[in-house]
Image 1 (cartoon, helix red, strand yellow):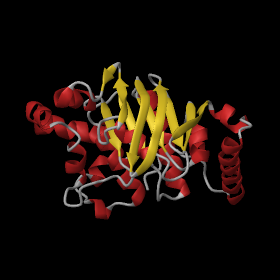
Image 2 (cartoon, helix red, strand yellow; image 1 turned 120 degrees about the horizontal axis):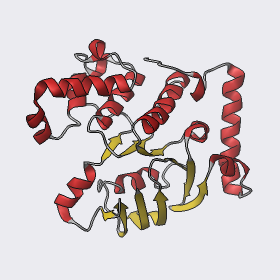
Image 3 (tube, rainbow, N blue to C red; image 1 turned 90 degrees about the vertical axis):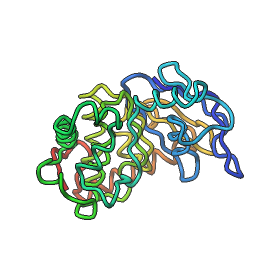
Length: 266
C-alpha cells in the first residue's frame, strides 16, 4: 500500500537518512523511536506535507511527488491524517470540524442532509454521541473527545489509509486505551491501512501487526511485536524493556489497558 524508498530529509542536520519501508495493505504499522528521530517527518512525507530531499514515497505504486499537484491531490483523497493535538478549528463546532474533512466539490454535490448523515456516522464510528456533541466548540470538549473528533474528520471521506501522528499524546490511561482500541476497530471494520507514530510503545505492541524502530534517521528494526520483545539488539532491548516496565506499572496500579475498554466517551 505504501512504499518509502531511500527517503532522505535534513533540516540543517539530517533527520531521515535513507529510510526504506513497505507498509502492507490492511496492516497496522507502529513507528516508534526517540524524539527528534524523524517519525513525524516520515509520516508527513506520505502525503507531501514535507518533501524529501532525496527518495520517493509511493501509494499503490503511484509516486506522491512525480505527478504534479493534480496527482498529489488524487493521492491525498485516499489518505486520512490524524494530527497530534487533533488540530480542530477553535471557531468551528464539531459538525463543521468533521465536515471539513470532505472536499468542497463533494459537499456541493451531495447536499447538507447527506453531509450531516456522514458526519453523524463518522462520530458514531469513534464512539461519540453525535446529537450531544454536534453543536459544541472544541473548548467544550475533553481531551479524549477532541481526539475522537479529529479521528472522525479523518475517516469521513472513507480513506484507504489512516496516518496517526501521536494519537494518545496528553491523554490519561483510560482515554489512551480507548483510542488504541479505536485504531484497531476502525482498521478492521473499514479495512484501512494504518500507520501510527507513537511514543506509547507498550500500547503499540498491544495493537500493531508490525512495529518499526527509527533511530538517528535510520530504520533499526522492523518486525512483529513478539520479535521486538525478544530481539537481542541493545537499542531494541532498551525500548522493549521500557515498554515492559510501563506495562507492569499499569497492571500494578490497576489502571485499564488497551484491551479492557469498551465504548469510553470521555
